[in-house]
Image 1 (cartoon, helix red, strand yellow):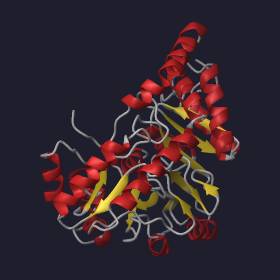
Image 2 (cartoon, helix red, strand yellow):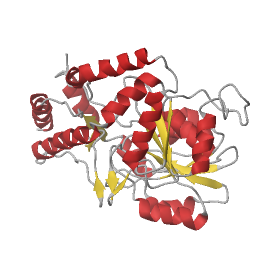
Image 3 (cartoon, one colour):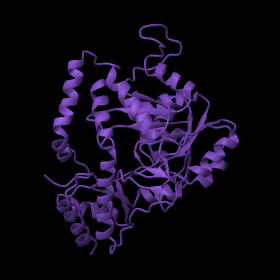
Image 4 (tube, rainbow, N blue to C red):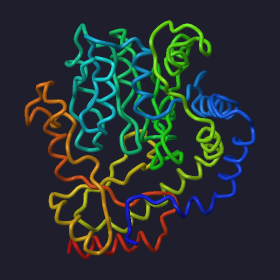
Length: 367
């Protein structure tokens, strides 16, 4: 097998007994939907982030959809976000009938350029949606100040930044609500899809619990506002609950891999990740930049090293969002980055010898 950007098999072997015990415990419990494992994970995950509530849902995209609905964002509203993100961020906005409004990103760290947000706010703006991308946080203080001044809620997209901090504040604990994905590749990943929304707002939490269960306040009772079937299942909840106890260990492993790259590639022409002021990066992906990106990827593929591009097509350039009217050149930093960025293998169990193979191959190709 070649070397890929992500692999879970070594981690699974190390944790196999605990994971299988979690599965067996759920199967023997007699409760497979919204039982003790979901409730326990929700309690633990909320506590980890220092908030009052967590509502487990079926995936990260629906975490955003339900969070937007719980914040009462809908048709005719606008949500300010970025185009340098995974498409689900924008798909979720579109799914509730709102219009995504894009600002550009900073060339240093590829995160939302908060200085552009004020000019994008209109009377229709009903939510600010910063994406904590690649493993580190957006500059939240000025964004929150804008939100407070205009009475607009902040929904954090934390799919890629579990455990990251910004000036000591944890990602997901800074806005009115925050959405998480537990897709297998994530820093805290399940063995399939999963997601959650956290909040300290009691009304938002109440709406979320109804929305994830068809809109019912009680089981098979009365639909008050049509909702979704978006429940986090018991098996993944129990696995996530146990993996949450190891999250800080995963973060340490990712940072160790990042340090090895920083040392091994310091003398190359690659632009390595920049950690923004006040941030503790968790390196969900290790994104580098080079103007000859496509050739580098092809040459490494010939050496059985398979890299990834996060992301080759900015969302505003996708045909599915042509109706938004963003012309080529409207987000120049985002568009320039899309032609140069790519991701190196990054996961806590990455063997140092495999990482050295990648580093050595990059030296050869760049030479």
